Length: 474
Image (cartoon, rainbow, N blue to C red):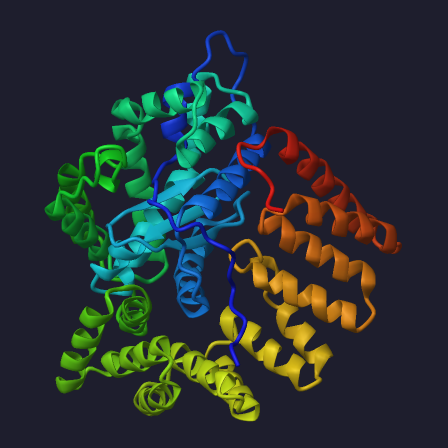
């Protein structure tokens, strides 16, 4: 028995990294009237997200994404009022990289997380990328370039991500990659993002030294990647210079009175990524060595490793040991998942409920508990847990699918079609999304706001079918 996960069909291909600045090099039209509005900027972001989902390998593990979101949201809270609904993703590549795209979507590579020492360094990267978005550096670049066409910008980014084929789009994409000057944030933008991000980081209770430390680590690596893939160093220049003034800023800033434990569950995050995504022989040896040294995270990692191998009995034994040594919702969520896979639903439920006592906001635990409740016939309770996290559907499309199924089972047909429409929209199957949205619109009679939302979604989907650089899935 396998617990449903937040997943989508992924195309395993060479990962291509880009930001909106890549497209700008190829789509600066002459004589255009004005830059994109904030609404248009968000629309570009949604279209770029569609492309990324198609072409980049993303980590789909709910425990990892829940942890990442928790750290990101601690920074978001310090931003203040914002027009963006921030979402955080992990790219399943071993290179140290990170980027943000229009609309509030932030991506960090697995390789960058694995080279960090603590949560504060992870929070530092998020703070810096959030600052770029919050300061609207992309919008300001668009304004300087006088770009106003959503289709032009998204289309060019699409050509870069999709690659291959023939025609001017590919040539333009190659030109975009080659013009490295346009890929980089300006010196002024970087300084502003550092200053804003540093302020967010400190306000969230992290050690002021963490930002300079992670930037110094990346500067030492001097990683450049392949010639056609821009790296963090090429898009975020002057790291050496920035490390110096960030270090000075940290020295002038006293540590927060309520400083967060910057280790905490962070080693568990790294262990989960290593167990599930790195070379199996290397992962096993790392955890074996760690267990000999009494490393608690290594016990957890070895449990996850055995789950990856399908050895559920050994996974259960090790995760039970990890849970005894570490009272963590991260560990309990993984343990509950093993109970579920073994068909031990009542033990799975108790374990998930214990995890929610420790962290009521743990998104993956709400989802997994809802699945257990659904299978034991407690559908209304399951719906309640899913509704707690329904705003996370951009990160976790499975939430919408489960809501659609459950609401249909309790005869709430209109909303069932609404959530299935959202699910298929996230899955890039626009034909099925349109079909479900139309059924939802015909069935929902008591919510003008919801009808307005569905009408807007249908309009956008029809536009996607005509203009998007990618095709709808069948």
